[in-house]
Length: 607
Image 1 (spheres, one colour):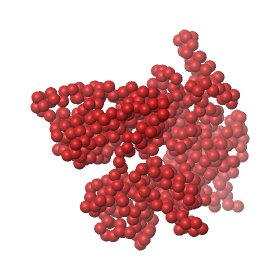
Image 2 (cartoon, helix red, strand yellow):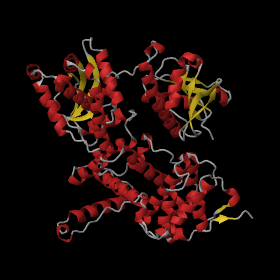
Image 3 (cartoon, one colour):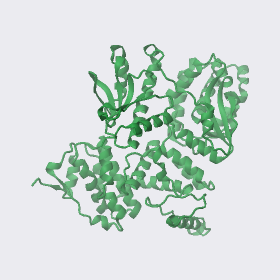
């Protein structure tokens, strides 16, 4: 059932938008006793005029083109948006106001608030940057129409800090920042700025070059570790180095000797274990080189002497992480798993070499892979309990917070996890291990309580390895059913469709949950069971939506519930399963799937 628009939902959306995009406006129409079809919530774009806006109506999140933007003069702008955002599995363009493509909507009906905030963010993230880019390139078409995001007042940032400490902010020009002492800590997310961000920063600085000062934002430090401001600091370092390299006169170079020395120390000491970060560094250097004509000594002088940061130096590690959490919970670049990383780093009692190794391994992963792993773990934990798990968002990270070893509390219900934790630590650190070389890994299980801190990072390393293992067909007997099924689901004609990817994700979530409980036992017997259960939904559905797999997986008769209740693999193997009748098959491009069903005698004649 589509989410119901009422006063409560309108207030919820207003609050969410205000906290996430402080400059956006929200307009609501929700008259008492009115039909749902006449109720809507509108959210502004980077353009002031509300003739172009985002809209929530009848369970859909949409992008609307109305009023003056339907005129011929705006056709190039609209064609640009339509070309950049094409109808696919996530978005769909539809007719509106005599326009063939007058609105674009997220391609499914929203039923819950979690879905709503996810869809709003998805839509705004997709269109806002495109609108800003086009408006910036065509200012004559949009006179006085842009709404620029302002740096929040200093008091807004500081009020997020605990009352136990009030750091004294300082205003520092870039040239006075001690780059040689700055450290990018392991809890920081990757360097995500792209050429677009670099060009915007350069353009902004040029725009304000005739002003007395230009405020770049806030730089928050703890023991010289950058808590907030990493993206701008790294970008400025790249710009400063490039301009300095252009200067040929040795006497003029001498005047920049001190700052360049500090910048070089920072660049030498800062490592980028994440390949995505390194890629962005290289691409941004090219973007800076392409703006060479704009980057002269006048520009460098303004950056070093007139561009300023509000520098806040925190004195307590807890403050640093709380600031990191509060500042970035609203930032669109920060993923849910980044917040978890910051939280669990705060919970580490004493940083060990194994912690550094786990964190470095985390940093080296692609963001898409980390999101996939966390979504899979989240769904396994929730679906096995009969709960919805369509998205893993920032407001769901509590699922991965558990027992704190710092608070001194020991409740009876999680004593088993504490005992296992302590015993595995004692066993692993015993000097006898030097002789026998034995290892004992903590017995992770998704149904158990998570232990915060170091054990959390052990857990994520464990499940990243497990997730990769179960997806490789080489992990199974080449002549067995499991191998054949994994080959099949990756190579049939319709495999790349969005709905088919949903089914595949559901299958691997189930498989990971089983292996988490029983290991790689009886794979050739249980994987056919999982395949029939998962792909039965695919064969019987002309289209598979995210809601389809969510409802299917959380159902009381779901295979995940059976695995949750199983004591041995044979509780799964001995389950009776229905197949599919020929006239119930509604899937196209699924011939290989049908053939595999026939192999297991799960395709029935219509009679």
